[in-house]
Length: 226
Image (cartoon, rainbow, N blue to C red):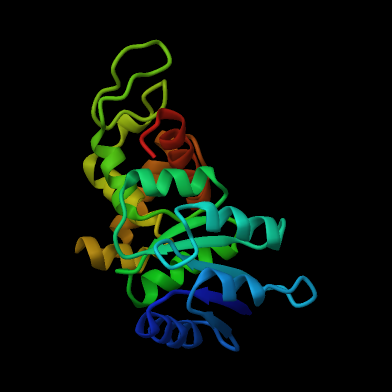
């Protein structure tokens, strides 16, 4: 696997490179300190499997750098943004402009590796805090013009059927975390996590993890919460 990692902080690049090599056997990490040299390293004849761009590094000019990078790599190569500080608007605009994910630099170890695995599997990755905030509700209006209640999911209110614990599990699921990690994070038994996931799938009318996260993220984007 080949990864292009562009960040203007040497320590960040060094730490992430070591992490990728630890979690992905045979991983080659090509580094750049700003957008311009990163673009120079993109070669269609030797494509990358993943491109990671620091949102705030020189040359990005907001999301212009993302759009330029996407134009150069073409279809099939996921481009993900990294940032140490971000808000919901940053994430929403990144996804709207074609990013395959938005990864906080605060993620550590297995959580970050799981985020990368999710992107490489063709899914979008967003910070769990974004999904958690959505679960709490923002008072958005539905298509009929009435206010959505806290935690309501979709026009039919599917998300409202989830318990607070089920929403926590779904938020952690969006990070690509395995059941064992979710259980450890929430101080639950793994079998209890499986029980919660079974209820989440049933209430959201889906059959697996990817579909549950996909529906949640789609509803966030549709409602304007993302």
